[in-house]
Image (cartoon, rainbow, N blue to C red; front, side, top):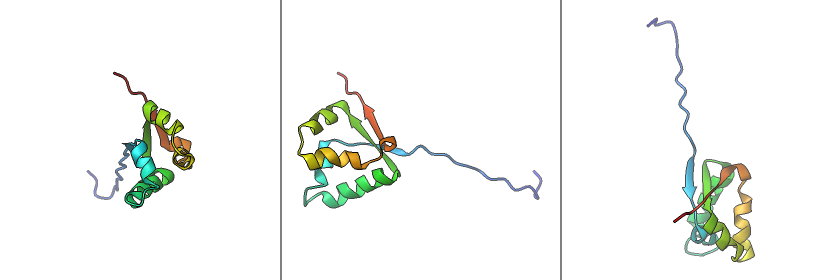
Length: 87
């Protein structure tokens, strides 16, 4: 290898996808858990992690308090992924 030739290695990593259920989302409004839940949500918002929501979690959110239901909408769509739960 020629010592005058410089090479660059580019490492590409997929962003971490984090499965999140309603207890984590609701934790954003719970005095005991809000520090950690909101920190995780901030990572989803800026895109350093991506949120994975199951169809079951989305169904549960439909019945949740409005602030819990709307919390997910703070995350840009391209940082949200849905998964299907099957038997």
